[in-house]
Image (tube, rainbow, N blue to C red; front, side):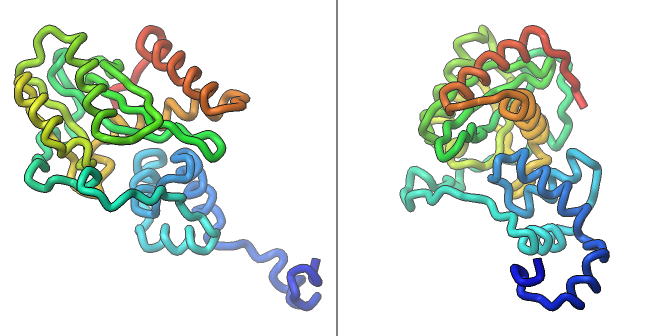
Length: 250
């Protein structure tokens, strides 16, 4: 062991039984990171610690521990193309303000996109949920993450609802939600757009919690062998979620 680590025997025995003061923080940070399928950076993990455990850890400490234990998200390089840029003039104020209780259907919808990752392949799930009963209003799974993914999800939701006048739809400030097409469809249907503040996932925590639950009860509990099998499992789970599973409004 000492030869492999390239240390002397005396040093090995000196530090062998000394507990790493960061170890227990590392364990919960790693759990949040794994729940995100390796996509969260230190800021989102800091928010996740508060959501899941009620634990407040300074973001600088989270970043230090992630660097220490080589926890690093794998991001996809996006093309530097106008289609992938946020249109600042279409960014809207946060009208929900973390008040996630609705007293009727079609009062507040929340929406977001998440990765479905298996091996080196991935798909994207776009979902809209109603905050009144926390049921899925619409969802679309696609191999490409673009404006059309969000537009198709919104159109599917509108096709199922007769009257959405006065509805608020809440999202983050992703480029898909600041597109002119998304804005036009919402406004033409009497829907008011609301957006989380930049870098504040807690502003859309119902979607964060929903996606965390979905992944725990699909990917983590089954022996999946392919991305397509994972997608089928997610589709089945969404039916179960809407029809059978008990929901919490916390």
